[in-house]
Length: 226
Image 1 (cartoon, rainbow, N blue to C red):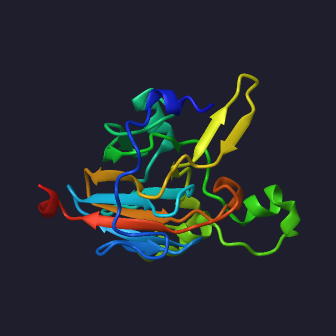
Image 2: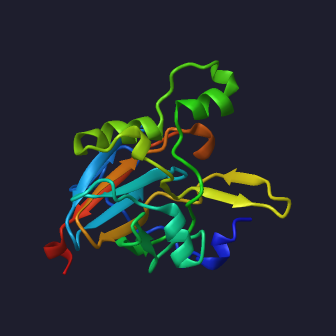
């Protein structure tokens, strides 16, 4: 079992949500299955990722808007937080040891900081049944979404894989279980600096219990929630 479930246990069922698997709530942006988008955030703005159908991962990657060479660092987030698990109260650090954002709400407590976003190579190597056929990927979707901001493919590293249930057993073997989300579960960050956030509705069927579904996104400007 993933130790994140003990470190950050659920405190109740998924919150009520005015949207559904068929349509997002008013004011929310829907990412269709196996797609991605970029969102601009000013300091104090909040970004919420919500699972409207259940058991769906969303990859999140952050870059500083003023200098996109400053990017989210899984390693520094792990190092400075002294944990490979993040939840409410955690800081998300950059490769320059600066806090990019804080996690301010999390109804699940299970997320991954270890795996890179799925790519075409992921499907070529780990999905041999596909026979090398072209497949949508989080990496490809992040590349497309972040390219207008000057972020190149080689600049996209390990993502924060929101709702992804990755854990290692006593023998050191990696396990990926279905995301422990129900419709309405959400994860919210608050920007500490001007940011561009790349967000996906994960494309890897094996990470999403066999079926890829949407992710709903809400941006709340600082003045609206203070």
